Amino acid sequence: MKVKLHIWRQSKASTAQNFAQDGKMVVYELDNVSKDMSFLEMLDFLNDKLTREGELPVAFDHDCREGVCGSCGIVIDGIPHGPQRGTTTCQLHMRSFKDGAEIYLEPMRAKAFPVLKDLVVNRSAFDRVVQAGAFISVSTGAPKDANAILVAKDAAEKAFDAATCIGCGACVAACKNASAMLFVGAKVSHFLHLPQGQPERDRRARNLVTAMDKEGFGNCTNQNECEAVCPKEISVRVIAEMNREFVRAKLREEPPSHKRVGGDG
Image (cartoon, rainbow, N blue to C red; front, side, top):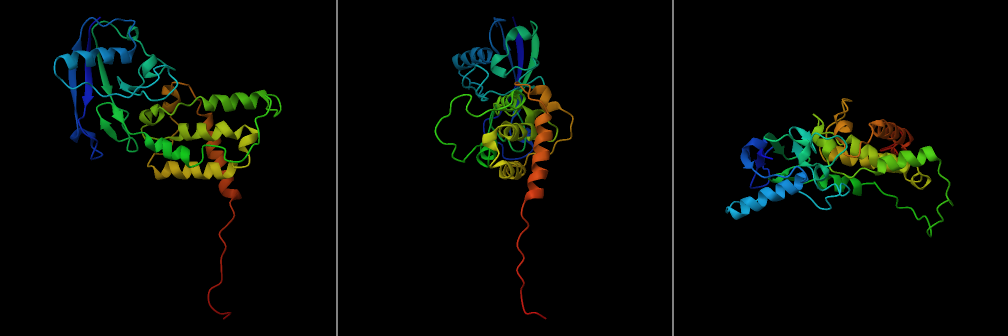
């Protein structure tokens, strides 16, 4: 099959919020593309061609290519990860496109995800949010038998559904506000339904939301673009849980102590 690729090329990291100042769309035409190629294999095929022709290859993120690491992430025809629902870029195959298709490839643009080169963005903002509290730091002792700590089936399923988040950033790229609430909500919900997550419940909600705001992510306006493009199909239920947990944590927060200054007069 033949494809015409319109790819964002950017040789240096973004220096301004106006991305158009730093790069441009470049057109490439490819013949003999197998419909059984994955999307990233197609990009490998393109880069091999560019290298043989003495051009710089297209930079893009990838690692496991099995849909579990969250490294890959390209906006394909305006949709993060492409047209196939519940699928990462690395799991997308060329049979999802017609012969002769024109395909537009862009990085996952957001203020908190500055473009580094071509289709590669810096998603370390997610790492800093995770470091703010998406973990259990209390000592739980030696490993327990599988059934030693009883967890209700419904609670376990909710925790597992949230834990499937791979931190790819598709939710941010799809949201008109570049909100990270689906990602942060998944981190909150993951521990919310497990007994091991209860001791740090309030602190976790406060710290994660504070870190998210500090990184410059926007707010949620409940249009559900994030759920629509999430490759793990995480429900916006986790956003509601995050909001509830944050309000609960702030209400339970101890007020600052006030010391009297001056005399008794």
